[in-house]
Image 1 (tube, rainbow over the protein chains, first blue to last red):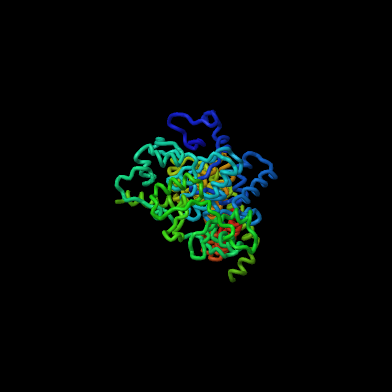
Image 2 (image 1 turned 90 degrees about the vertical axis):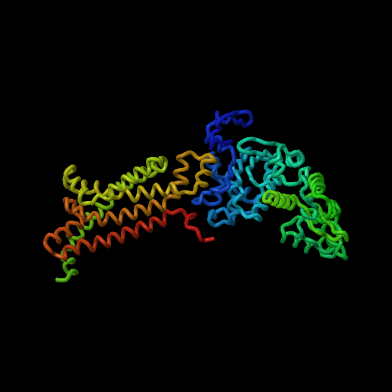
Length: 330
Length: 214
């Protein structure tokens, strides 16, 4: 509706105070980025042509849009030389949707609409695309209107969640606010059991929220090898273990870049800026801690101070989702 | 006298008939293309009437060529132009149908994307829909052409010339050699046209649609 592919039955939509009905639909659409679930790349055009479609419609000179294509491809780690002349049919689903996102961004519209853009992708690809969208958003400062049915995705990406049901806005709030003060039972259900009232359902603990597949390295591993392992796992921090396998600290990629020296032990860099929690910490406390502390994750320890796992926003949302489905199905 | 030496002896006649035949087919199909591609585009924008129109054209297609020629003869008189008009009508259906389906079967996501990023209808047509429908449209032209090569032999009946002349002469005089002298070049012509259009089809198909080179 925002780009007038559909017209509202009633009411009006304004962008920067201007009613969109007073605008020419074609021009309006060119000023709004658009990403759809079916991706919809033009199969008869190359990657470069697809990205440059809107700049070309806007009659941008060639040198300028070429520069844009170059920069955007760089931004998502798809080198121009390798990808610009490929056709959509030669790309994977994830790569195609990356190009779909870039096409929406190419004319640098202030607003980008994303209509369940990652709904058709496998979970791993979806994760990395969500991450990229978040990075792009931080960097390019766009207003992104993102439609999703995936609560995890909403919690992960949104500054403000607008919860809609049957065409009505039920609640509009930040993710934290929505989790703490859901406006209706339906939202509470959607959010799972992290919303205060428990209704006699079994408690969840930190150990239920964590994921156990975590990159851990021994104290004595050298710095370069640690970086190598991080990049192989595509993570940007690592847990360092003491000689007796107990938790020593964490090291982020940034720390290594700033202070790391080749040939030194990773343990020398280990810091303790990540909250440590016990396996049996109630889930809600763990949740508050994670949201409140601005840390990327929490480290869950066993009683003997060995590492049980970590709680990330993703693992938490996943656990919430599972619990919700169990509750719904039972 | 063998067929070969017969054909050799009548080379001039056969070649002239062949040239007439090519001329007849070429312009009939061209006329058909000029009618049916715009019509197909129009129908793809008006799907409600499309089924009716396509059914109607399908019915016309089932009228025997001989009948159609007869009617045209009464209305338009003898000659090449009459034959061309009739043949053009017969060439319409495959091209029309393939243009229509070629455009309407484009993935809805692609159309939504095109519209959503602000393409006008004309831009959609020329930079997305027609390129994507090209293989289908050219396929239709190929079917029509092969078809018209054989139907054009009927045109001999109303004095339009072409290879049909030889065939009808042969039939009238029980002369197999005449019949074959008309039928064989006609068959070869169908092959050659089909091959040439197939080549065009490959040249015109956007590279991104050929796939499988990843």
